[in-house]
Length: 76
Image 1 (cartoon, rainbow, N blue to C red):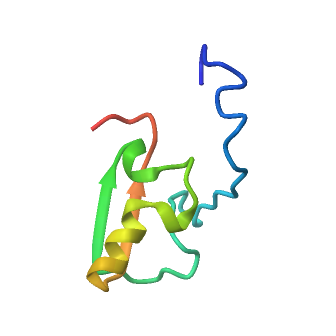
Image 2: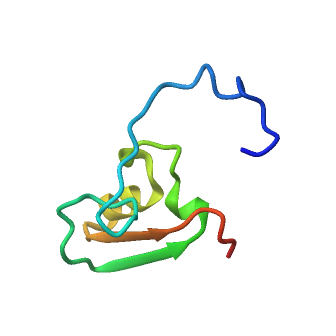
């Protein structure tokens, strides 16, 4: 974060964030999907583990495969 505090997130747990081969927050084995969600950093959520993404919650609630096409720093 430009101009942010270096220790602002020091107490947060360490997580591993993964991206698919196209650079999106999806499971690597996601080959087909029922719903696509596009958006900015709210959709990408690069600071949360996969199980906490709203697209993961949406997939679990609907019982559908959801593809996350979020990209940070793009705005809506």
